[in-house]
Image 1 (cartoon, rainbow, N blue to C red):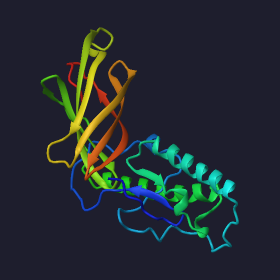
Image 2: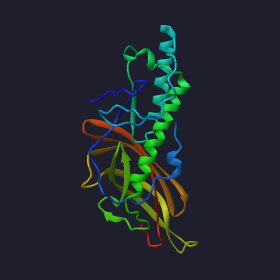
Image 3: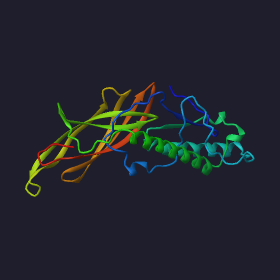
Image 4: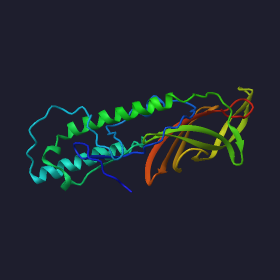
Length: 245
């Protein structure tokens, strides 16, 4: 069920609460995943009052056509953010629920959202930082490929995702060992012990060199009747024996 949160300008956000898992993660989110457009952060069923509001100004005097145009721009700003699949989901309340003081210039709206994006990303960074980083760990061979794990941050909770990679290798004389020959399939699911379910929607594997893949994975995390889009990346490396890390 979707819930609206009233955040000054009637921006809404759907968030999970009440979960503080002390989990381990393989790596921190890459910096390039944090280069995003404006978005807003809040807590479910809690009005956000500390948004660094600008000094009180005289409400904008807008005719109905202007209000409709502003509302369309608000929606476009929010949609652009949601397309980033950061692990936070936004919405804008219906136009008839706006009060006179809720109307602001689209630039002000975007700036307020950006402040909340920064808050969310900082919370994500801290959440991932408190987990123990594990590097160069062998993946586990399982039916259908090799399994490894990755922590993601979705609307206030850490979720551990199990990733199964089915790949092929071949011998390279220059490497004097195995190198990647291709990836057949990548599947993902919520790891045992983590909350919710995970629905993978797409993936893209890019060969960085003959022994390293960068894999971009997109999906939807379902929990507490909420469904939140999330995008994350992992890197896997193949050693000369054909094992991945």
